[in-house]
Length: 303
Image (cartoon, rainbow, N blue to C red; front, side, top):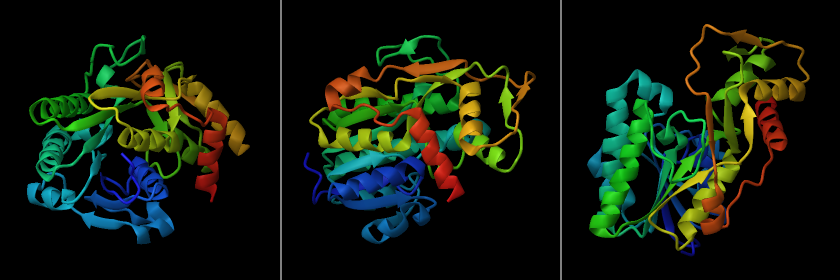
């Protein structure tokens, strides 16, 4: 699909990842509508003047239907994140499962050509394997379960109604504008002169991927002829929590020493995925190495 001149709806489009997707869509010449329950226009900066922002909740069937009207494509990124979903599982069900159903139903009725769905590596659960898309789904959290449900709703709409889709399973996304997450929470403590606290011995490791690369994967997925697939989106680089902390201390020039809290429960030992399928089908691979990516985050926080 040539995105130039096409109307694209981005649910959650002023959030962390969504705002970067909106930027990329505008670069492609798309007409962008953002549907967001709590708009954060500051994330779009000067670009906010080129975007139509509709304040609304994905749980509101009528509001979703109105927002989808005239859209050629939908990026469904609105979500109740991991922490809040653990704290309020019923709200997670309503936003992440029922809300996703509402978006897909509206997209199908409006004749949308494709949906790109933001899933997460949480669907795999905790595994020592390097996961490709054929790896069994082993979520043990409400958040992971809600993302699995969203993926299977997409499959059902595709089978019943022929709705084209691509599901993107993000690894550990980091970058500017992130409210939480390991990188940002550690960085804020370091810049405040406080020692970052590491759960366990810090050996737990993840695949860290920069948000701008994730946005590029989204746009490529929409523009491509690929449909009916799930794709991992990661950098392919495995880094431990202790190493992330060490690098941030060096980049900031800080002299703080990390503290290791062995009483804290380590929720995840390892989550690293292969993104080879995204390279083959979308021509996508992460372009930012960890050093430049972390430097980007430090610069954004320091202003």
